[in-house]
Length: 260
Image 1 (cartoon, one colour):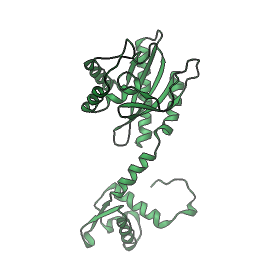
Image 2: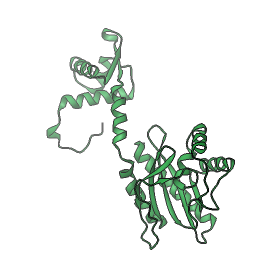
Image 3: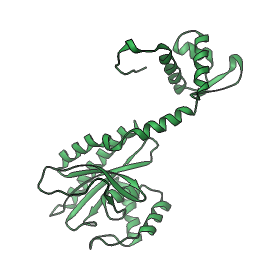
Image 4: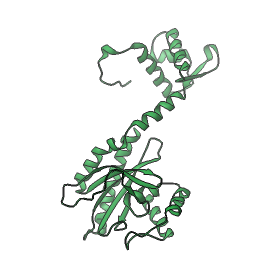
């Protein structure tokens, strides 16, 4: 069992034993007291007492009676796990990823979370250049015409993305904005296929953005990251090369955030 490098003087052996039992059950459920005590060491009576205490608090559940009684993990652990995941800040985990993304592309990078169909910016790293895209924390990116917005929209179930499109419409921000629902659906399909979105001057003239979704431990979309730059004479192949880079960094952040 891996443990944190902490001062062993403060270890409470009974607590460590309880953790070892939980890890034993995590490997395979439906074990008896005899099997558990053999796995973690110690007497059956001490193992039984620990199991009873854990079951009292919902961390272990059991079925059967006597020597044939079998134990499994309890649902209280699921509740704690959900709370632990909620307390991990995507913004904090994203910072080193954004630092590397900006360093690699030379472009400003951002991370956003979904809120009522929009992408809300919660973190950013500006490129060390004269051009700055002044989007403050909490800025909401439209779902249909921005790199972050489309990256999130593409990963929603079709019924949910259709609801958002119907609710907010497809207002034109520039002459390049996709305003036809069928064309947007086709674009979302392509985003899912390649793993990143492209805002090709759809939100602001002369500006492009590439985004990719980030997932949580359930495989559900938790947010997205993106880079933004000036379109100028940038060739299409370079935009898609940047897309591959953004997708790779989104996968890295997904691994950090999901614990995989």
